[in-house]
Image 1 (cartoon, rainbow over the protein chains, first blue to last red):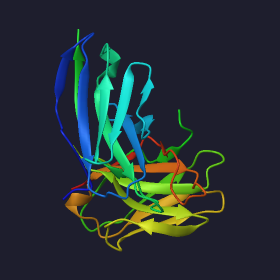
Image 2 (image 1 turned 90 degrees about the vertical axis):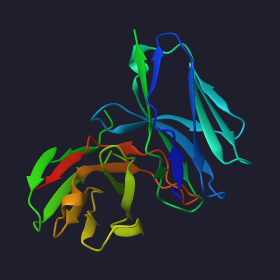
Image 3 (image 1 turned 135 degrees about the vertical axis):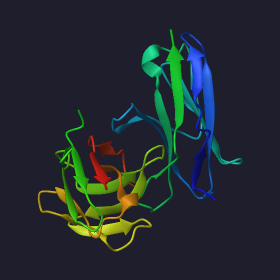
Image 4 (image 1 turned 45 degrees about the vertical axis):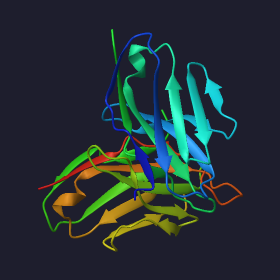
Length: 110
Length: 116
């Protein structure tokens, strides 16, 4: 089983729509969770950290469900500039590596 | 811009050759990690260097090796190249937290290697 699994999509949504997707992780001891964004042929960049209580950053909302071992990302009022691949990232305690999912592709159309 | 620079940006090699990729980390960061990203996949951890020593290694064979220099810059060397080594190689700099975990990763734009 992969450490981090994501629905690859693509999710094709119109501008202004809400889109949400999940990822699951296999290591129940994982402590740190992140969403990274990767534009086509570019490097990944941190979008937001995911906290146990859930957190928002503008139009983006991240949730963590430890019992079911999944993380979600919701994007409200989608913009064309939100088109990208969103990478789910997990870090186990005392583990220096970050484990990346394969990414979920979102395309926002006009 | 993250301040992490990688070179070369693109290169083509043939099977059996060797390659060296270089990375300059962001100012103030003491740790460099290397990731391999194949097409359509997420980045896969190769190894991490902290204080010039390998600090952790992913599931990659010994022909993948690296160095970190006193100025925290780093090299990734791959010997006996195989076709499956074709990928984007990403360098990321970070600060190791007191918990032992890695803080936010700041990636360079990557070196795109094609093995023919």
